[in-house]
Image 1: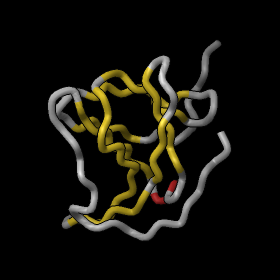
Image 2: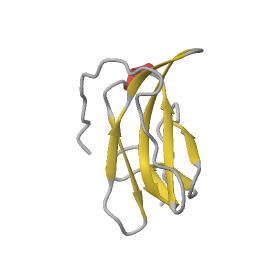
Image 3: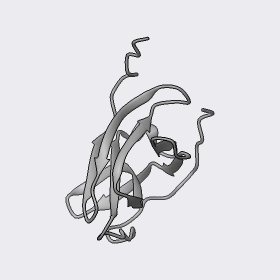
Image 4: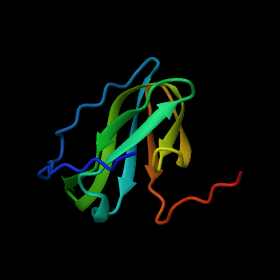
Length: 111
């Protein structure tokens, strides 16, 4: 996957609307500041990938970096490190917010 980088300013508390309920959930991927602007792709088995950019988030308790996926159908999602390498998997439930911590190093792929 070509790395997509964007220049985004910080977001403030309450600037992302999450559509939760029924079969709809959300995912937050926490990263370090080094990934600011990078788009991280996710996908459900057999479905096209979608992406979201890592942004600096200002909240009451400080600053963190994350990619937010606000309106996802419930199910198991693969988080992609690059075009071919999964960084991990996460289950999104209807009405809930799933949280995933981006790995600090590239995952080991076993053939």
